Image (cartoon, rainbow, N blue to C red):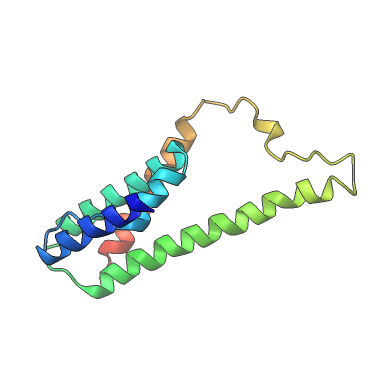
Length: 134
């Protein structure tokens, strides 16, 4: 609790100074709570947002909203896929021949982690283009 109060105080001080570098307590809390592999994607998203923000000559709320809505849709889609992936686990209790782990097929993914890196890059490019669309 004390750390949260300190971070809120620092963020309020930065807001009064109208500094660009802020310390939102939710982002810091998520960074402390989530494992590193999930926090790394959040950092990538923040860096991408900063790149897009600096790349625009004029700031407009319409483009900010487009990028935010696109990212929110991706998060919602990920949650829906998570629910779909939970179905085999739930069904395996009533249907024992069904494998509970849907990723058992990919215990050793082909090509290692490269397909994931390519997919992350493509999603980043998609988000950057969505945020820059007019």
